[in-house]
Image 1 (tube, rainbow, N blue to C red):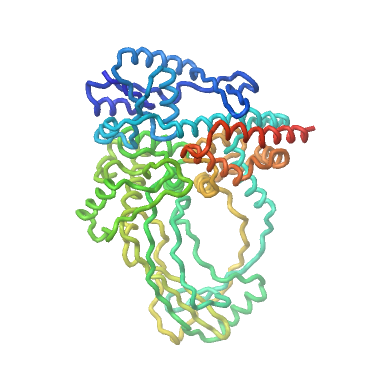
Image 2: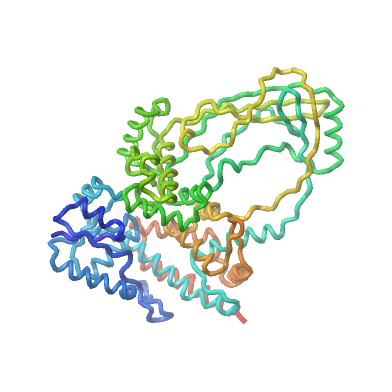
Length: 571
């Protein structure tokens, strides 16, 4: 009997059924060991020279119980196969299991989807453990504990209830506090949006000095926002009531005519299939799920075999999946089949070669399996299915139009957009509604039915929603797919931030902690500092750095002196 060790008990039945009676599948339920809480500062590891000595102990009573059961099972197994999740954490869990169970030359299998075909294919191609991935995971664990356990006593000195600092946590908190300070310091200014309405059926706005070569751009997909939230154009801002009144008077007292009309066909490329970040953003904007809930629901879909692994920062899709989508489109939506399949490359900072998040089978339609899922699972699966198929469709074709008019010496402008060919938008809508402008000729006279000026005020920069914060974290290199949701959750649990009307607002406690860290440990809250560390973690995962030398030198050259300096600043 071959013993297969996976992480989640939710996947056990699928694995067992796929492999059959010659195998026994058991779950570790995640990590079975953790760093001990002993030694200096209860770190559970020692730094000596350029070496790191870790001491691992079972993770509570559950860890002890699981290890006891697994050790018993190993005794009767002819072979032990490690099939934990396909990422660094999964690799280090297999490494821990192999050490605790005393399995020599452990055989590792990896699959990004829980289907019979994928499972059998993975088991047929075992490999050794990837020590580089293990090292990167060990470094993250030790690094985060070092920062948390030795840095947190600094904020305890505030005696205001502050509980912790963290390598990713504190940099993320700073993003929110920095934005809050910008909002507080913001001084609103009055401005006027001046417009004319024409009997010909459209509204034009004051255009200032129009550059007639300007062409309206097709905006990029922003997963953190709903397509319905896009703001309408309001023209060139006027900064005084006097000027606004003069413009309105000119509009009312001078005849209007068309100066120019422009129409240009623009193509909007489909967005890539979901990564962890873009899934969390889209689920927040469209389904109102917070990042933690999104990942819980995605985990269920993954375990049930509906989607591929949900922790990834790669937009790539397998050749087999791309071929299956092409076949589906040829049979069901032939006009959406592109001449050439879009191939997307992973970003320079992306981790191991995972696929994007996608359905395991494109023919498993959301409408067909809806009854098998909870409403939240059905909603998230629908997003994932639509986004995956959209990413491999034709671009959308839009007619972007612009009408420039004139009255006296004042120029006015109207922008329009008409969808000519849906393309991928049939599955993934990420543009605003059509704005249809009439067909007009250059020099054509126009009838002004109304002219006016709306007084408005400039607005401060907006607070971040959870979706927008994750987008910013990803762009600035703070954290990685597995850390986005836990980081936001931790900030809320520490009472450093609260949600108000679906926006993250730093509390007084959070602001005090950030201000304090900015004085005593400023590097730790800088995005570029944390992003550099993430890049070095990636270098270790690719075998380009020694993790123990990195950690000991980082502590010796930066962190220990920084802590000493910070301690001297505390009264």
